[in-house]
Image (cartoon, helix red, strand yellow):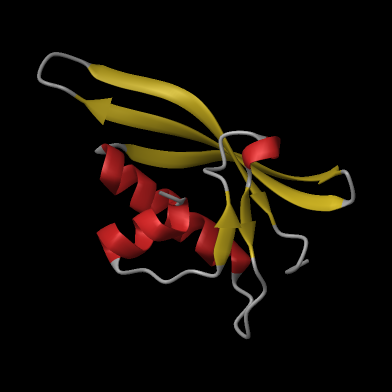
Length: 103
């Protein structure tokens, strides 16, 4: 199942996206241009949905624009926090969004 299909099923969100799950440049989430063209809002919404689905909270640490093979890639570095009964688990993750159409 694609990320677009998962977001539609779990959150009834019909986003103009394709590609992968964003865990690497080669598996980035492609955000397609829309009339509103709020690609940053779309990026944050996707991360919110993924956080809810995984049962974690997250905060942005860094955001940077990369040029990779003539594609504009928005890289978001986030810190995730997961609470269990006995511990607080934090880790750093990167998500990659291809915003070429929107840029």
